[in-house]
Image (tube, rainbow, N blue to C red):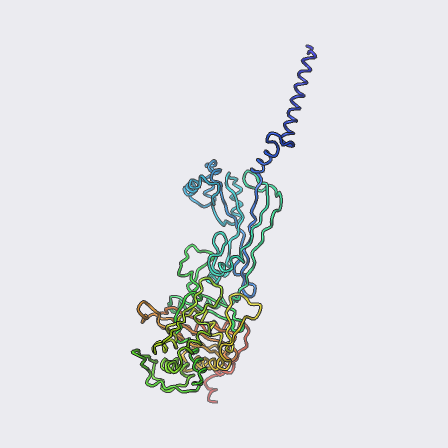
Length: 568
């Protein structure tokens, strides 16, 4: 059957018109911006597939003085979801809950709680491999976010010093908090094309690169930190004490080489963290230093010109009455020199010296040694201690002040004060950061008096002194014991003590200052019996690790000789 020409023309014209309309529509949709054309569609497409991806920035590394890492950030992943999208995939909830190690009821409850939101975390800080396996399940509305988590290689050994970060990698405690702005990096951004499941198909542009945080190098020597922590923990277990602290300082630079506390905690696992274990006692806790400040009272005595190390003091009959209070020695020592007053830790001798001096002169020495002032270590919450200054002092206040009651210090403060003796009368502030240049120094007492006091402190550790257990083989040790009653409401506890030992080594040319405090030891509680042995072990290791030459080899060799050789 033959088709009429006009019908053929109509069909062909219709087809051509349809082709033209299709071409025009394609042109308006993809090229011309007519009637919400290509720009609108492209915008809608980009809104569904183009994303700005945040590039996480890792936090700066905290290291010890030798470059050993103490705090590092490791890459992890966090799983998040869009609850509104997840609602449409209820059939996948059971296997999603299994993959998250979460009860299905808990997942359902959380999705319901955030049903009006477009964002909720399912699990923070998942290992990258586990997160990738979960994402391969391709559950609608479930996405992955790259993050970093803080890790502390030394664990509880450096916990109090470093502190820790929160789940968002921001500093919460310790030096992590102090230097948070310095350590914290700046995240970057890039534009990417993603598919339905949140997988990146391609990168559209590099955007802005992440800027990592700056590193912090501490003054701490991790080797000494481990050694001090080990000895302190052993001592706490041995004595049944409530707590304890050890601080070691390099007297030449003022750098803190070790700072440890007990009890401690594991910053990598804080599920059962107690507030008592969290406190950095060496910097925050204050205590009455007791007899450890007697050397400073002796400085005031020597500066007055009334006394020399060999000046005699009559301590008979072994006690002295000041006002209504009777102060006693352990026994009647009779006539003692000033050096022997310190060696025997005579309360009677110290009281007689203190009452013969202007009380403001004694206070002035304590003030020059940094007591009552913050060490400016930068540690958050650091205590300044208390150094009272009264216009009028009662006699008993003058006496007790001279042997360490009525004032409070921290372990770090006391170590800083003893560095004046080690550093020939020069005061310099301590530092928790490694120093690259010499700090500001101030001559607060004469080098001669500093040397005289060190010599007297060396007698304390020798036979007849109160700190023979602080001795270290092949080295001369100088230091002072302290045993103070703990203050309670209305006075002092009769059966709760603070045992202290503060000293320098080697005595001939001091390089190390160390202070050991033991809080409420059971049984033996004197500083010479409880704290001095810890000092001996810690300082012995420190001297050898720092390669400091022995200064008392002859005494060590004489101790090693058989008894028969002595007669020869």
